[in-house]
View 1 (tube, rainbow, N blue to C red):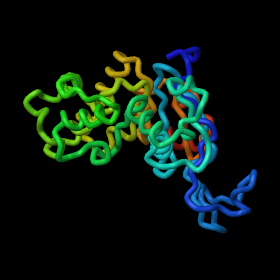
View 2 (cartoon, rainbow, N blue to C red; view 1 turned 90 degrees about the vertical axis):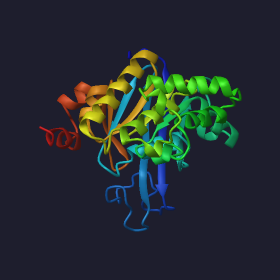
View 3 (spheres, one colour; view 1 turned 45 degrees about the horizontal axis):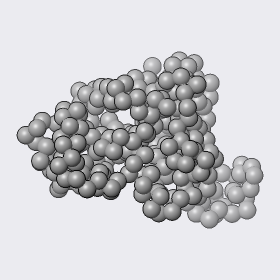
Length: 281
C-alpha cells in the first residue's frame, strides 16, 4: 500500500446515536457525556463524528475495547444498521461523488452485493447454516444478479477450494463445520462477486490459536493475491500487527489515534493506546 494510491472508501463524520439526544449532549461541544453516554437523557453515542480513508490495496485496522464503536462502523457501511448522520463515499460508486447512504434501497442492495463483502464475527450472521457451502455462495451471487446455475456452482467450488474446504464437504451445511471452517466459508462467500472492499469483523475471535493462524494466513494470502482493500476490526493487537498497513484506535465511539501500524504500536501517543499496547508487554 502507498499513500498515493487512490482512496477507495472515505468515511466522513459518521455518527450513530441510540436515543434522541438532548440540548446538553447534542450541542457543538458535548462535554456532558460520560464516556459515550449522556446521563441527562440516556442517549448512547456509539459513533461520534468518525472519519478516515481507506486506500486501494490497503488493510486498515480498527482497534479498541468492546463498545468502542469499531464494529458499528462496519455495520453502518454494510447497511446492517442505519447511521444517524455522516457520509461514506466508495470510489466505484458514482466515482466517489455521492454518499452510499443517500442511495435508494435498490442502490444500497447493489452496493452491498457487488462492492462490499463482509465476514461476521459470528458465522451465524453471515451464513445460512442449513444450506450447503455452495448454496451459501450462490445466494450472494444471485443477489448480485447472477442467474447461470453452472457458472455459479463453478465459481463457488473454485472459491471453496481457494479457502481449503475439501471437495467432498462442499455440499455439506456449515452447521456441521468447525468454527474455522465456517469462517473460511464466510470469506469465500464475501469474495464471490469480486468486491473491491472486504469488511472483516473480529474474524478470529473464539477460534483456537492454530485455527486463528490458518485463518489469518488465508486473509493475508487473499490480500496479497487480489490486492483487495480491507477494513479489519479486531481487539487483538497481534492480528492488527500482522495484517494492517495503518491502524485507527477507537475509544468511546471516537478515533483517538491513527497512523502506520508499526508507529501506533511501537510509539503510541494517546494514553489509551499506551495502556492498550503496554498491557500486552
